[in-house]
Image (cartoon, rainbow, N blue to C red; front, side, top):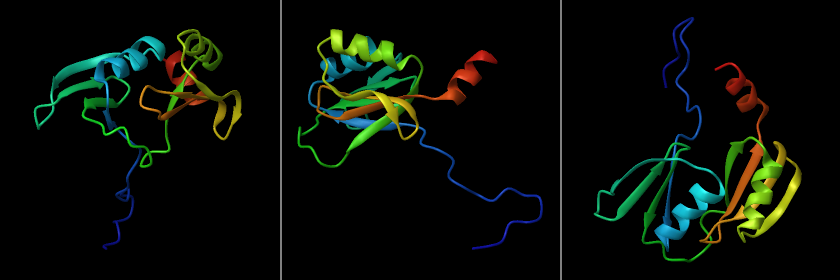
Length: 135
């Protein structure tokens, strides 16, 4: 591995850009992420193997064909605003609130179970609130 020249930034992985989940019922998952959590669909297209694919503005891709077996992904986390409101909306929609809302490792947090049984962690991220106020 070479040493970066003076003043140059070293190569580094910065953050997760997107995630693709294989789900059992694409329509139910799309409804959960868009209608319950408020995600916006960026595009719908065919995945490289011909399955339907939904890509959201929040960096989540959904495709059909999940086995329904659990164990690989423990939970998925998104920064958010208005955790209490999201939790109330999810509960009213019949979604399981796994934990919270309340204090969590990154701030005010809620865990909600999606249609495939994944725990979706949402936390109030002060950086997102500050970024939105500067737009």
